Structure formats: structure tokens, C-alpha cells
Length: 444
Ligand code: FAD
View: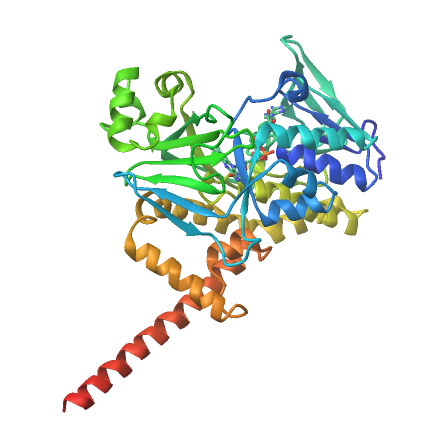
């Protein structure tokens, strides 16, 4: 296919989406070159960038499975069967995610996952990688990239073939597309930010809380979550407003931090010996949703992962969706080998509306996790959903299960959940009327 000099494809960004996409393209027989701004995480130990661990579920596992990586990823994961809610007075309540043993989400180290994917791409033979190489710009007509290597300030040009922009939520490749005619772009920040904290393993390397759960401390205007790591530790993430009287900007000293946490997260504090230090030293990061389109330019440039559709992390789906882009895009490329512009358009049309739905779901799930998970009404609703799913497994599937444990496209899952709810509500009202009529008949 390559009538141009340089590789067939240049993938910009060797994060989760970029390194998996390199595996897919290599398996399809293309020459792939990968450019990454950071140093090789296999040499530096990784750890730069966002969240230390992530929840990987059905969609991500399916994409990994198609290139033979699922079992390796699962072997380094801690399965989480449900949510463990921590109330302010220390009471614990566990809610299972699904009804089957296999209905788990998997806590995986981001650095470990990235390393595994880079090794897999490197082993493919037709993938070359350059680290410490930052892409500044792309010429949409020729695909030539402007890059800066290492500490040098000198900008050099690279032939790139087809450019796959996998350079994350603040993508340079996407930024170039903004200047093209009829490119839509919208970026929404939450007023909340996040900070990572930790609960180390106990003295003998044991977990200090239930390991097979995603721990949540819902506190109304704030929330902390904790995901287990195989070494017995938990990575906690505090979500809190960035500004205001109760916010990240309000806590300024280690003493304030300890006092505040002792009041609101009392059961976690004894397990957090480095709390004050971590709170003051670890970055506070922002949370952004990116919607844009189209995700491509002619047969030259295509976007995947967060570069195309960054979502806030509350449904644990951003990386899963980024992984799922890779097989879809590869299939489109393979079915329109002579017409990449058409392949990219088909990929965009197939995915875009579902990723827009995910963006909404992710924001709605923040409100649910922060404000509702501990309420009796919410717990009752979840219990009813599980009962209905057990009794009518083919007819009623909770939305969370469709999103996390199936491959049903996000938009279809939401539509089906809405229809199910309508039927349940109608039957509920009908049942109430029958009971009322029966009571009146008995009384009369
Ligand atoms: P990234 O992972 O951001 O990778 C982009 C890569 O491009 C990076 O390596 C970067 O260095 C490189 N790059 C950037 N600019 C350039 C440039 N100019 N030149 C060269 N290289 C460049 N998702 C889940 O599925 N489950 C979860 O539990 C989950 N938890 C999350 C928790 C938090 C706090 C956050 C913020 C996100 C979470 N996500 C989760 C979302 C997930 O992290 C992202 O969706 C995922 O990382 C997207 O992968 P990506 O490869 O598209 O982007």
C-alpha cells in the first residue's frame, strides 16, 4: 500500500491506545513507526502520567484477546467483584457488580500494562519505536511531522506515511485538525480535580482492606476510591472540587490534611502513613471530556483513544474504549485497503455516537458514585436490578453489566436500559393499581 517514502503508518503516542494499535497494524502486515514524547517506560520504570492503576473490563479484554494478550494482562490483575462502600462512621457495605462469577472488573497497573503492550509491539518485527521524541505538528496534506528529539530545541521533519494520532486528551495531532474546515471540537472540564494517594500493604505484604473490591468513600461533594494492586497496596484517588471552602485549594498543611481526613475518611487514615506528604507532594490533576469530529483527515490522519474521545474516569471505560478502537479501525482499514479515507470515515461513523454516549454516562456515574451509592434507595434499586437479571437473564440486563461485562455498543446499551426501565416502571405502577383496587374491593 505504501507509495510514499517512510513507514506505512506512524503512530504518535505509545500510551495504551498507541502501543496496542501498533500491535494490530503490525499483525496486519504494515510497517509501523511509533513516536513517543516520554522516555521508554521499560527503562525508566514508567510511573509518569495519569492514574497508577486502571479497571479493565470486557471491552478492553476483548481487544487484548484478539492479539493474544488477554491472559497475560489478567495474570497481572486483581479482580474486583463489586463496590465496597465506606460510610463516615466506618460501616462497610458491599454491592456486587454482576450476578455471574465472571462479572468482575480488573485492577491493572497502567505502567505494567503499557510495558506489556510495548514489548508485544516490539516483538512484532515490523514495528520501530522512538522515545523522547515529541511531535509538534503535522502537515495534513503530506503527513510530514515536525518533531523535537530529547532536550534539543531543534525541530526536524519526518516522513510519516499515514499518521495515527494516539497522543492522548491534549493531542497535538488533533490540535492541528482544529484549523481545518468543518472540524468540530468541544472540551469540557469538571470543576473537580483528582489526586492520587496510597494505602501501602501491611507488614507482611497483606492487603489492609478487602482486596477483591473497588473501595468507595462517597461523601456528597467529594469522593475517594481505592483500587487494589497485586503487591498488597491500594492506589486511592481523591476527587474533590478544585476551588472553594471545601476543596483542594483549601487544605494547605499536613496538619490540616490529617484533621480533615480524620473527620471524613476516618477508617482509611490509620492505613495511610504518608497521607500528609502525598497530599502536599502529589499533583492535583484536572478532569476533561473531549468531543470532536471527524476523527480523520482524508487518507492521511486518523485519531484513536483519548485523542478522539477523552472521557472522565467514573465508568472506568476510557482505556477500554481506547483499546476497542484498535480492532474496529484495523477491520475498516483491511476492508478498504485501497481507500483509507473511506476506511477512516467508516470507523468514525461506527464509533462516534457510542463514544458520545459514554461521555455522558461517565459524568452521570460520577454523581451516582459520589452522592447516591450509599443511599438505601440506590441500594434497593441495585438489588431489584440483580433480582430481575437473575429471574429474566435474557430480558433484563442492568446498564452497568452491559457497559462493563458485554460488548453491546454504549448507545445500544443505554437505549435497552431505558426500555427495560420503562417496562419495570409500567409493571410497578400496574401492580400498585391492582393492589389498590383489591384493597378497595375488600374494604367496600
Ligand atoms: P494516553 O494514555 O494519554 O497516552 C497518550 C500517549 O501519547 C502518552 O504516552 C503521551 O506521552 C504521548 N504523547 C502525548 N503527546 C505527544 C506528542 N506531542 N508527541 C509524542 N507523544 C505524545 N480508563 C479505564 O478504562 N479504566 C479506568 O479505571 C480508568 N481510570 C482512570 C483514572 C484516571 C484518574 C484517569 C485520568 C483516567 C482513567 N482512565 C481509565 C482513562 C484512561 O487513562 C485513558 O482513557 C487512556 O489512558 C487513554 O489511552 P491513550 O493511549 O488514548 O492516551
